[in-house]
Image (cartoon, rainbow, N blue to C red; front, top):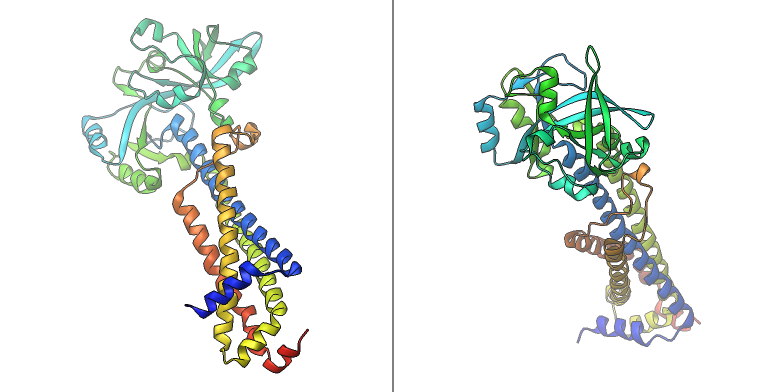
Length: 406
């Protein structure tokens, strides 16, 4: 039988000292709360990043291709996507899908209200999967009826509320050109992305409207939006797409278009790192305090063990085993608390947020087993490593004085 482990077990389970029991419970609670906060912090930050990225890239794609010129307006210059470029995009294993689009500035006039907007035109090849998830009223544009599709429009709930519009309403939109060009539209759907820059900036309509207004050729478009399979590879994929484009075209990633959002998401990683370090320090301090008190309360026992020939390292292992036992209880309770709260939030969304400030209506949770496992491992390693320092106090204990110690 392992002598040190046996003694540690007796101390941990059979201890009847009231004061040390209180300190031990405080130490366990400290480890529990520290681990729970760390689990929730990482889960919330990852949930934030994933959901906000999905919101932006779901509406605007990951990479956009436009004509290479000096035009810096919202309305892109037209170009023809040649067969060779289309073939390269289709054969690229990192691209999930792509579709043509065009944009044109416009003004909506309805209910004695006026709102500037950016009309985004798409065709029947547009992937509606993301928009369908965020439609709160109505449906998508029906491109099977080409005549009706020219008059159908989707707007955001932000724009609908400002203009007092609802699904089924008609209104006049004035397209900005040398002379304003009025067109009548019917709202077939209202969506809520939750990102103000998108919701207040765009409406979705038929690409052919822009082609007619601008007198473009049938095969001319304003740009191409590309969705890639793995967002973590965005930079490499965007660079490879750019390198294969003809000289009259350029491409840029969604991170270049929305630098403010992605810079903010990057700062969240820094905040998370600081919080994790602080929580780990709290847990370590609690365990150091508990170990020091246990050593002081067991001074007599230390002296007796030394008088029986036990080495300093052997006695240190007794207290380290005891500390590991307490850390284990704290980790178990911390996992239950952290993962439990995370799962409850995932299913109920009980903790709400101000969507206008955070782009989300509730705190998102994204739990990963590898993250939880890593946090548990790091906590155990750091705590036990740091606890070697106070355990060195055992080597200073004199057997004779310790036995006399009351």
